[in-house]
Image (cartoon, rainbow, N blue to C red; front, side):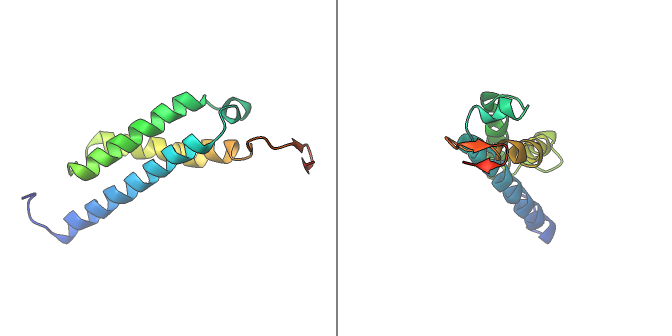
Amino acid sequence: MYGSMTPLFWFFEVLMVAAFVVEAWAFIDTLRRPTGAFPAAGKQTKPIWLIITGVAAVIGLASVAYHMTLLSILPIVAFVAAAIYLTDVRPKVKEFRRGSNSGPYGPW
């Protein structure tokens, strides 16, 4: 079917599924953050990050569904985009809550 089902094949399958989970998590997290938090944190706007993480999630799903090899550049770029969101953008926009009244020393 897809060549021999060696342990290396299953290792890459698990790796692709894990990458897709990270990409889906980044997209869902982007959906949950308030729109104003992105420019307030000095990052790109929410629609841009929705496009980036959404395309990454679609590529990740396609790589799992169609058994794209990890040597292909698209799954690698998709994972890197999701990782950038989760490590750089998410911590900054996470500080902003919907409808919270917070001053310089915490909520009031």
